[in-house]
Amino acid sequence: MLTIRKIVVACKAVYARWQATTFGRAYARFKAERGTILASGIAYTGLVSLFAALTLVVSSLLQLSDMFPAWRAAMVKTLSHALPGVISDGSSSGLVRLDQLELNQGIGIAAFIGTVTLVATALEIPAVLRGGVRAMFSAPVLRANFVTLRLRDAAMVLVVVIGVGVSSAALALAVALHSQLDSYLHIPGSTSLLQLFAYGLGFIVDGGVLTAIVILAKVEVRRRVLLIGSFAGAGVMTVLRLVGSQGLASGTVNPLLGSFSTVVVLLIWMHAAAMVLLYTSAWMAIATKEKSTAETAPGGAALTGS
Image (cartoon, rainbow, N blue to C red; front, top):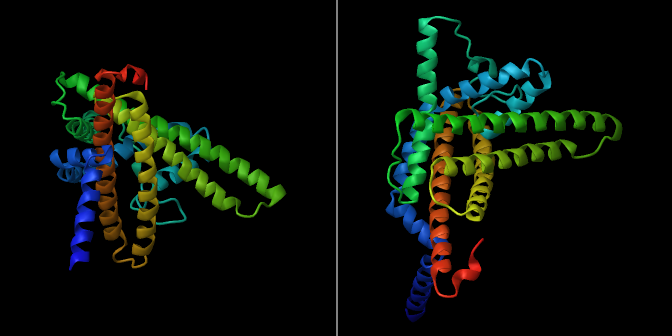
């Protein structure tokens, strides 16, 4: 009985020490700002707005893929890695094909209304993400006129378009080099290396997108803290993406439950990704506050510039 009591006391002591760390204080901030509920809202909003945003991203990039056919295949691979089970890449099933996301409505009032509705729906994701990040920083609602806020949200979508475009171009180049080298050298395991390269590109894009989300949320954060937090969060999201793709691979064995399991796993993945973003934002807020406090404290001037 005494041993159990000692274990409980030791566990409480460890937990108390963890609460005093930056990670523990960030988790306390995450809970205080109802991070789990915010993540659920982001996930549901994201699920509704996902295909509108994908339509804008794909339609923008397909205009260039007509000139570079290899880019189209690389873009499919990039998007299928980014959103497991959503885009069909030919070798695996998905909810939609790339050509189904191409915006081709012609000219007219109906097309104009449809495009405006599509853009408004797609911009809901950046707006919700901005609100969640500001909540983790305990910042008030961003006061600005409607046009300014929508331009800020559009900039976030543009960052995603550029990220997907650049990573797709890099992947297309890597695939071309792989085909040329493999025909001459026959390197064993080269396909696995190419797969690893694709996930590495996804990691870089995720880090860039997370950085852009925090910057466009207009919160006070140190540059070093921003980069560390963004790419640490990107690493966790890459692991989540791997787990999500494995879950979809096992869930699509039954054709009757394939689409349903894809939506469920996608919703779970988006909720987990939103929690990573919010916790990372809470960590950035606490780390920035700690550095600012250390600099203003006596003898803390030596810490400036970090």
